[in-house]
Image 1 (cartoon, rainbow, N blue to C red):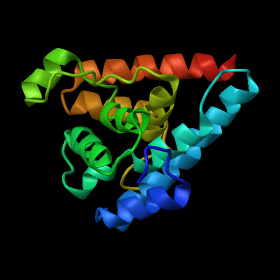
Image 2 (image 1 turned 135 degrees about the vertical axis):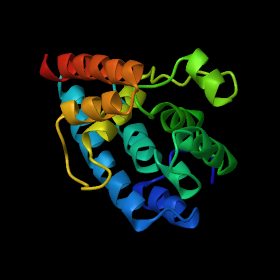
Image 3 (image 1 turned 180 degrees about the vertical axis):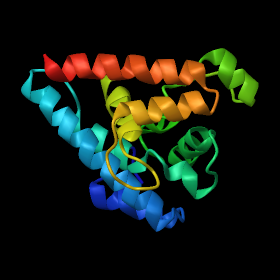
Length: 176
């Protein structure tokens, strides 16, 4: 694949080529739909957001689940995306979408390379936020409180707090 953004069809094809389960593909489509809704709403408000990047990143955000369903699926997905020649902006969305992101210290505890694992760009934040609002098992939209409670119950207090802050930031942007 060239270093240009993949189309919707190319992104789905990449998920299939990398043996993502039908459930993962359905989830990625649902996250892409919600991400695009939010991005279009932001665009109407005059916010500069790349709709094609949001769609491509959202469709491919869980490509790493073809190899692992653990927290490192973002890192694994970023490696797959790089090997497929995807643009760096898509690689970053994949790498940074998990939870509310991870600090350098947390990444080191996982044994990950020294890098940034927090969503920074608006497109990264939109996809990460939309992912928290689409339940993986039921494939439906859920209130953010469900994800925050899940993270807290799993002992991820810092992650729950980052998701809460991401929610506040995105809510403020979307409601202005």
